[in-house]
Amino acid sequence: MSRPRVSIVMPVYNGSRFIAEALASVQREPHIEAEIIVVDDGSTDETTHVVSSISEHDPRIRLLQCEHKGVSATRNVGVRAATGEYVTFLDADDICPSGRIARQVQKLAGRPDAAAVIGETLLFEELTEDLQPAPGTRYLQILTVTLHSALFRRYVFDKFGLFDEALAFAEDVDFFFRLAEAEAPIVIETEVASLYRRHPGSMTMDTKGVNAGMLAALQRSLARRRSTGRIAPVNHFFNRRLAAESAFAAGTAPKAEGAGISG
Image 1 (cartoon, rainbow, N blue to C red):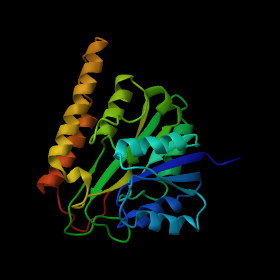
Image 2 (tube, one colour; image 1 turned 90 degrees about the vertical axis):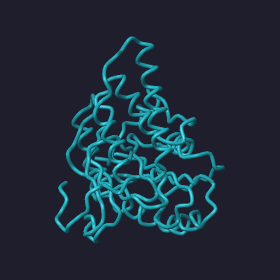
Image 3 (cartoon, rainbow, N blue to C red; image 1 turned 120 degrees about the vertical axis):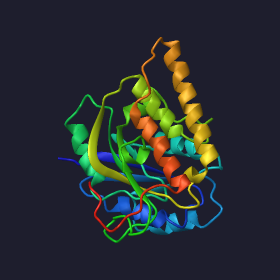
Image 4 (tube, rainbow, N blue to C red; image 1 turned 30 degrees about the vertical axis):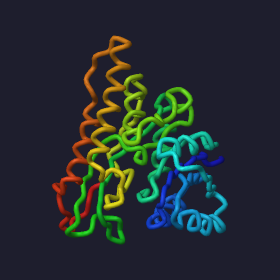
């Protein structure tokens, strides 16, 4: 029996510092046939050199280069190029926990009605060798809407559209809003599905930008719901995302004390 084909889309802009680690985390994913689509958004650092050097030894990695247009446009290039039955994402400074993709493929295989599966997100500053938050560093483990904690069936993007390129922030939240508004069935798992790095260069450390993006995504969702007469409240998953980003930006996220994190 052939293995399921999964397209892993990795947008990157000046991500040479962490991208080798991000790539390594998906290169070692077991039990799947993967294509790893790295879309470079006009980087001016050594990103393309790093990716090209790695791809010489791994034909699964495809490097696509674009003019600098932002993360939404970059993700859209990757989705359009995807040939897999399933699509997932990983930002160039984050890490995919070992076995996450294969686990989620299996769960979707058992739920043919479901559009996607999403697991928990571990936000971290620094990890130990066994991928636990380093003692004394801040972390949060939450179930919320993050692209790289989810696996989607490819048709989802044909049915619900791609990412809104007018949004510099929260384009992923806007996408999840559209799925929620359509009541697309989503499998929820309690396992950690993404390791989400927080560092000074993170886009989401721009508090004003994040808040403005979240507000724009919410306004778009409200307008769509009002146009169809739907007044259902916002799912609490969306509120958790804003709370988590705010906690890290404000430095109020808890500090690890050396205990293992669940999942």
